[in-house]
Amino acid sequence: MRGSVEHLQQQFHQLRMSETSKELPAFLRKAESHSWTYQEFLHELLSYEEKRREEKMIEKHLKWAKFPFEKSIHEFNLNEQPSLSKRQLKQLQELTWIEQSFNLIFLGPPGVGKTHLAIGLGLEAVQQGHRVSFISMGELVPLLKTEEYIRKSQLRLKRIREADLVIIDDLMYMAMDQHEANLFFHLVNHLYERSSIVLTSNKGPEEWGELLGDQGITTAILDRLLHRSEIIHLNGDSHRIKHRESLF
Image (cartoon, rainbow, N blue to C red; front, side, top):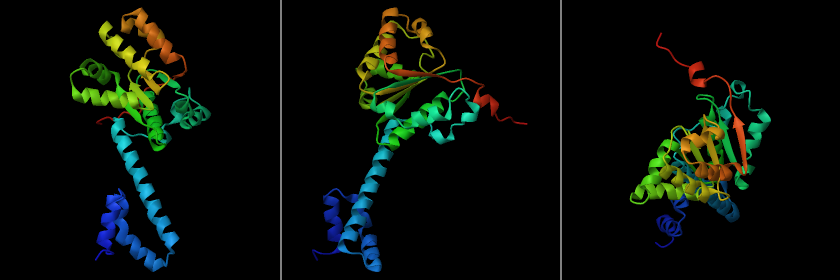
């Protein structure tokens, strides 16, 4: 029978409304028991499809973001980080800086919450529909060096270059040779004024020159990163040491 529920489900599936297709029998039963009008029925059906598409898009963007862990900004303990005010944190959460292609640089010793803060903002950005890519500097350099001949590196870097927000963790944790520094410059140059960049580092920009090894490249990188940026110094004791677990 052409008007059967199975046939309707098939039609919804062909129209790329797969979520509605799966739930159609349940919606029909609910419409009957609640005496929905045609308009109410269509509204419920389309709202469900819209909501599920949004949820699936967020799931896909979270997968692409490659966060090493998920910690929301609401879990960030401001009491343990006196150098950041509640008002400043709220301002960062609003994410207007992403729309302006503004960069954030979180500086401070290990364990003060730099990565947590960066990931928390990244999660907020995903929830608001932005494309986000997270990568540590230790992962990024090998990717850049192998992009020419490894397909996996090409795909990952393509997503990084197309992201609205790129988070680079542990910047300048180790020295680079001139070739690596040059590759990093080209990435920064591509992202400049196209995407927002969040950097975390335990070394200030004044020390980056020693690790990049080439003053010209260092100046060019700093020029692009610092042109539109906010540098936030996070101080205090290591959260990991403070809340360490012991055997006895």
